[in-house]
Length: 157
Image 1 (cartoon, helix red, strand yellow):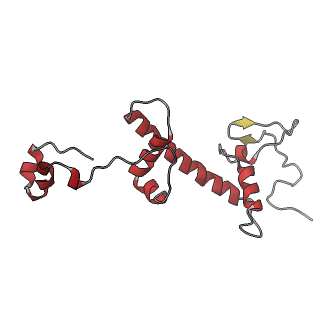
Image 2 (cartoon, rainbow, N blue to C red; image 1 turned 90 degrees about the vertical axis):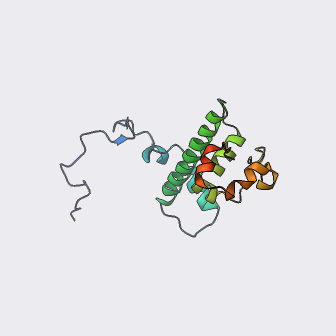
Image 3 (cartoon, helix red, strand yellow; image 1 turned 30 degrees about the horizontal axis):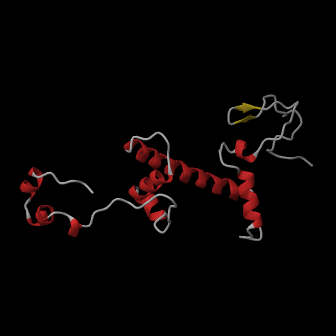
């Protein structure tokens, strides 16, 4: 019986070494390659797969489900670290702390909606001053026309 299109035909042996995210693996050694390395991800795919199996979210889990879930988690972590890095730079610090993560997430629209009901431990509160607590001069700015508003300095809160 012939096998079609899978490279198993006689004479179709691979002559090149398989490439995995820039790492060449020769046929002689055959070291095991992790799923994270094959899919070019930093987070562990095998661990996510184990958590999906032990969590009993479904009776059967496909082989690509943990890869997709790991890629989504890695993207979210990268986005959170990016906005936290900007908050860290704004506060003239070099290390990201939980306050920077909270400030960055709350300022971003999409991450703010995703993590709306999340409480960040040891991060304080988001800075905000209610309109009632502002001086009277800044409270009455709603009645002024556009020309007068541009002349006054209005702090962004």
